[in-house]
Image (cartoon, rainbow over all chains, first blue to last red; front, side, top):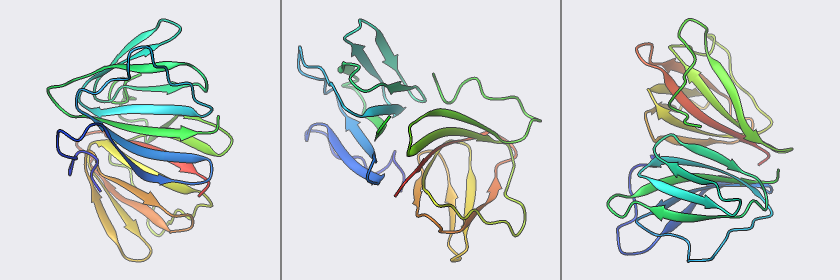
Length: 104
Length: 104
């Protein structure tokens, strides 16, 4: 499988696909096309999340005020309960993420 | 951190760096520069391994005779104890892998 191919078509919103995983880990591909988290919404997760941008561009915002612009190859390991949201994804091209959710 | 930047210099062999993980998962970047598994050697792992090529080119060989050529974006989820080896990595460019080892 190639994560940069067979992308879901535009117009269907953000699409998440499970790639692999076990009892304590979940590996997903997420394809965004301009989607962002709702205003004022924060992810607040029990699991750690390692996230990597494979193509496109995005910006993460953290409740601790850090802002992170991400492009191809950029990754971040988000600790459990570090509140964050997707502030922006490029509306002009698909943004492909690899996300690994795991028990820290 | 950008996984495609700050690559280790050539001449030092394959380099593995731990990026993240917990009790049951280990996320690593591996940079190969032509290295392969020794002839006749097979990885035979208790853990599952999800592996993704970010740049470069490689070929995996499985003891069940499947051979898999991998380029940027290609990934494979290798079941525990599915014996495999790295048959080839491109000697002309660095091959950057993301590997996630986990309990299946």
